[in-house]
Image (cartoon, rainbow, N blue to C red):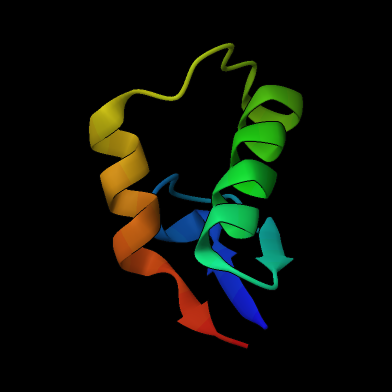
Length: 57
């Protein structure tokens, strides 16, 4: 299981997403970004930050 803490990219956010693979985590992070932060698209630089912040749960 892998996870990403949104607060690593967005200061003050306590959201954490998980998934079996990095791609699962990226998809969950995109859904979280839309729901919690109103982002309709996740820019490549943010995807890179998310990918680098993914850890084993």
